[in-house]
Image (cartoon, rainbow, N blue to C red; front, top):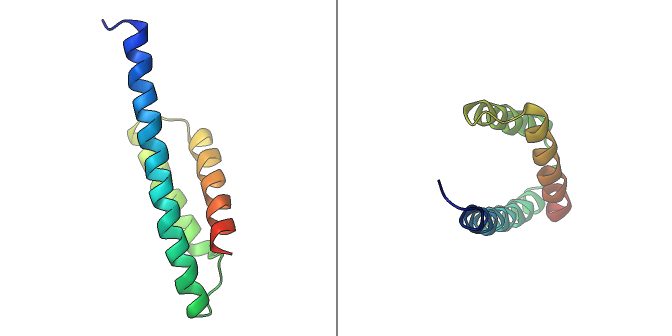
Length: 86
């Protein structure tokens, strides 16, 4: 078994990777916002949000994560995405 310091170092690396992915997601969200402005589309599109949530709930089950936690995390990400797109 690995020692605590090694395990924590792995968590730190994963946290960096997680924020890198979230940052890349935000870059794409900016592009989506620009596209929506150019095409006079609404920022908030409930049908798409439902698709995203369904997909994330499926992934949550695959990784044995709480549906509630996944919902809370995705809602926070979605709120930030709407802010970026606006």
